[in-house]
Length: 497
Image 1 (cartoon, rainbow, N blue to C red):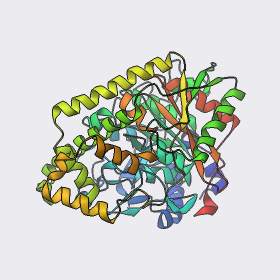
Image 2: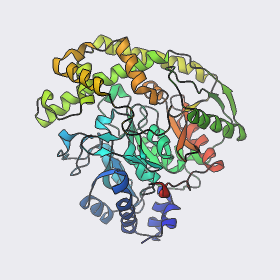
Image 3: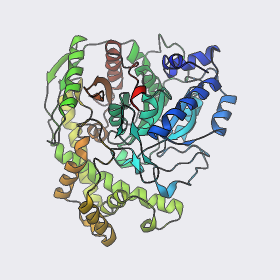
Image 4: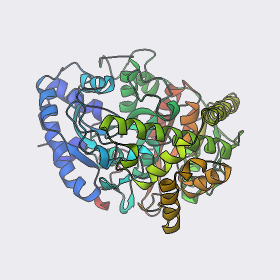
């Protein structure tokens, strides 16, 4: 068995190198990861299923030349089918659903040498900003177990933050990688739309959803991006990667950037002072690195954009509920789903194609505006989220709101409720937590949350950077520089949970 300090000293690429060189076996790594999970999971509830046959089979047939050779890996339980491994999407209705074939993304992960051995928690259909479901309970924050880990990739963020694994699969439709990365003090990267050649989310949320990984190290995130972009199948040289790769951009390239700093919420909702401090301290670090940081302002109607975002999410939630019901052979009205999901679905059923197209056009217009900002700034820096880590019930509907939602669902009147006033209420009720992160989803831009600041209570706060579409390498270059001058690898929350 490895010593804790030995395991913690390596990221995924480092562990793979140990296996490749014969210093450790994949079985030893898997045993260590499972041992750590056994200590963490009863307290934080990050993993809901563990596999035995699949990891044993993958280790037996392991390709020693693979990029992530023998590295234990955990997978968010949302949208990604692995043959023989349950896929619930956070739903009671799908707890017994087991795919009969792998997706292209699953095959790509396994071909890379990663060893998936379990599924991590999410919110139902990934729609809630916090990781909690009626099916599996709440996932708690490793820095303070009275708080939530953040959603919807909360389980993946927790297992990385606690060093169960150095890297875990996650997905992001409105900040679902970056929000829990901020809450859990790890690196969270959302790629540009379309880079991942293996994603197949069937137009999830209007193509807002992309997958990637939650990681400790920047270079792991960059190497994984190369993997899913089809840049490289091999680990030729970690110290001098091939030209044009994201790994090379992260660890070899340097340039001076102009960065626009914005700490005001685009929806005019409050931003916690600690979140602002996180962005401002990141700005100071960037200046120390020689980059230019300048005050900037949003140049689009943030409220209008978030109204469009919520409208699109409702529309596609209804589509997803109908498709899942058909797959399970259950009437949609009898599908065992949470009240919040039912309400979104009913509301979405009343959204016309014209209203959907109008909302999509608002998103396209926002990107055109942000493109103007990027003529002046290489990157835009904001807080990742507008709140410190929250309690699990922080955005729950109150008693009267639940009665109203049940009435809207039971009568079908919810399909007539999507209007300016109701959307503004939704922004103020729950989207206030994440006013910054959805912007990159609707525009297709790459974005990242970088863990650079811990507050006086010991809670992490991410700094959020966005680049223009295709600027993934620029983000990774800056992230690596920040990682070198303000390392977070040794910030481990073991004493806190």
